Length: 321
Length: 193
Image 1 (cartoon, rainbow over the protein chains, first blue to last red):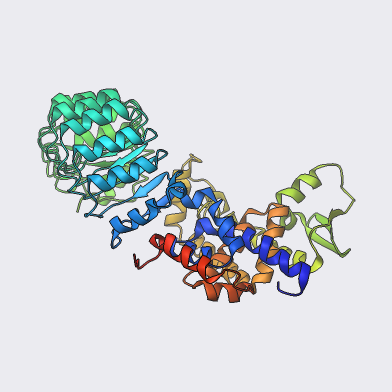
Image 2: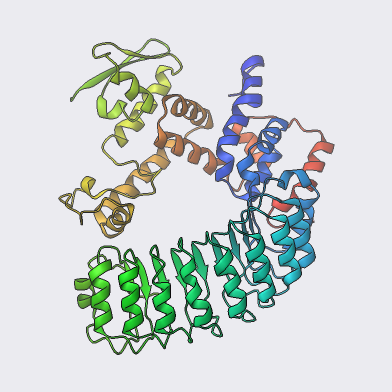
């Protein structure tokens, strides 16, 4: 509280900055900007709150490239950056990626959804500069090829989360590199990669820590491939939407192998029957909360009531729209 | 009243409160656990005005689960509409499943959050005292709400407005101000390079 002399100095130089440091991690970037300009003591205090400088979220913001350039002029401030969200920032090129990653060696989470300018060159900079990478979102980055996956496999051993949705240039060869070398992977998103085959899918079994797997659109996946995937005992979320070659055999293998399933989609698979649901119920009835069997015309007992009898914890009946 | 605890504020006033109320403070709880059955617990760093506000908050929260820090995952056993015999597992999945399906619990949580937001929508001087007290007494929910109260006051305001709220002068030189405005403009929305 303002007042005279001593207490007023203590208020502005200690108390208010203290409040600001506690509050700032909860604020949006533009509010942090306002706080920097409140007083010299707030400014100094905020620069030392490492958590606010660990996250930079520019997703879908205007002029993202210029913002980055501005931020990079302050080199030291972003040294501790751990999380960078450039989802939808379509104008950022390999050059921008090189600039930012060379300033941010501590980066752990890097999101680049829908960046079609990104090529193997950009990926090279990411993997060489950011040795702490845990989570990489390359969804929709159509121009990356198998060579990228070689680079990631060789350099990102700590990777836990990889999204390569719609990176349609990728083939079995590239994915195999990831599966063999990034053994700590917990989440893998292969949505809309319809040219992959069992040759790669079988090797998913190497990922013993896998909990989330999205194979939506994997039209070449067979029961043989799926039976290998059943070796990932910790799988909790499995999306098999439109995996049209899968039959009861593969799903039953999953049921027996993955006993803590929480989410499963069999959306659009016409060759599975009630038998696979019975098998799933035998092992995952106390964990399954989401089950999508829309379009599974081979399953006769598909009503909500029937499903709840098999899986009493079900709350959600739709994964794919 | 059930079992009570006596607390002495920094300015010598005595407050007698139920254990469930006082034990929201992890510090008071651990002090009471020692053999001080009849003694009073002194709290020299909290004066009576603030302590009474703190206890008002604790009274409201005494029989609710800690909602703010655990984001409304209510264990079934605390729900008035259930008999506590939830599907065996005490995993967080079944707790959040419970709170999402149980309207009664959801409504109770929302009412409590509303009350808390009103409670902290007070002058910032009080908020800073509450922050200090919550920190000193280790009361998680109060800490969370005091911080949220301060954050709400700050959000969307420009620096001059924030200075007014906190009763501060502008101690920057025009040059210093200009430099910070330029160097950190990338944080702003919209961005003028």
